[in-house]
Image (cartoon, rainbow, N blue to C red; front, side, top):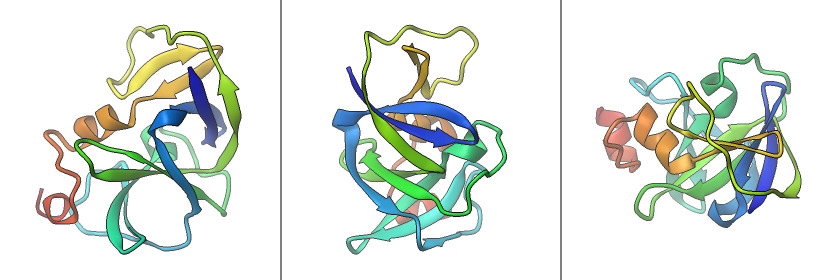
Length: 140
């Protein structure tokens, strides 16, 4: 499995590379009222409002970097979601993902010491039954 490794709150996480659509600077995130705690807001990505999940907040860590990056990944259906991280590290080839006990459902497991994130499950868990369109996020 190929992972894009990222740092969030001092911890290395991996996102399956085949789920990554692009990597962009997190220069403009618009907060919205009534979003779940793990969401930073929405970002304009090529004219589309894309929800932004803050991985540092979701893992309960403190922000360590003032400059942050967004990893745009495939979300449920065809809607993308952005993961806000401190830094992008590297690509890594890892063996199969091994499950972890007592973990949030959006953590797929661990591979070669890297915690692997399942972005689709992250959205479904943080916003149950999520349709990640802007209108749906704003009204839940």
